[in-house]
Amino acid sequence: MDYRKQFVIAPDAKVRLEKIDPAYTGTHESHAKAIPAIQAHVARMDTLQNLLYADGNQSLLVVLQALDAGGKDGVVRHLFSGMNPQGTSVVGFKQPSQVEAAHDFLWRAHRHAPGKGEIVIFNRSHYEDVLVVRVHKLVPPSVWSKRYALIKDFETMLTQNGTRILKFYLHISPKEQLERFKARLDDPGRQWKISESDYAERALWADYVAAFEEAMERTSTQHAPWYVIPSNHKWFRNLAISQIIADTMDEMDLKLPKPHVDIAAMRRKYHVAATEQAER
Ligand code: AMP
Ligand code: MG
Image (tube, rainbow, N blue to C red; front, side, top):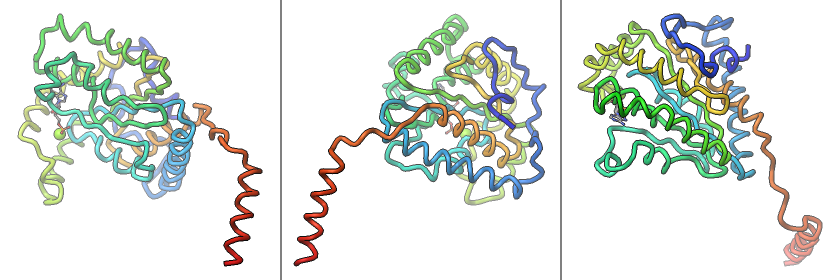
């Protein structure tokens, strides 16, 4: 199954999240049976990340968005942990700092955009400025409504500079969210993730859905597509996202750079050194 085709939001398509089953697992029966496929995609991602770094001409930006407990941290942990830290980074977007708030909304995102050869994962992103900001009326509609076009232009600029952009909405049901909230309460190792605002935000579910739907409708493009990933099952989420990232990187035409030395000459130097070493 090609999950890029299955889960992509086509440019200008309507998005109705209630029509997408968050518990979907495709033809895969269980986590255990999906493990080899997930491992294979993650191994491909790791190899391609090395190649991206060596190639040094392009970059990859992965945007993760979801409602609370949607699994953004889990995606980072499970899918990116095998990558070389040299050339990979994760940026979390929290409430803007004073300095960030003093700038335009894209400023902090732009500062963290990947340089050539790099992969950057945005754990939340510039999309918060048409999501939480819209839902909580932090700026008037006349301000946030203009941001879709600005985001599209920003992403087009990054693309023209050699950045591939993949945007994932991790789709969970309200019931699954509540189960995850409970798991956090019951697990001392995860209680730190509980936020004062969890239930107030949950009460705004419909408003967030409306904001996500409009954001994805207005900013999913050929070069910076949105994918809605069924995420009630963490393993299926990991399977779909790892396949989409690996397939995308496969198509980036990444190449090892040509050696910048004369390999035959270097080999002769090596033999001289090896002979000297042996004679010591
Ligand atoms: P967490 O990801 O759980 O650490 O929470 C980060 C919080 O920062 C979330 O409640 C986000 O909605 C919030 N946040 C992120 N970006 C913005 C923004 N631009 N304006 C207001 N709140 C934001
Ligand atoms: Mg949170």
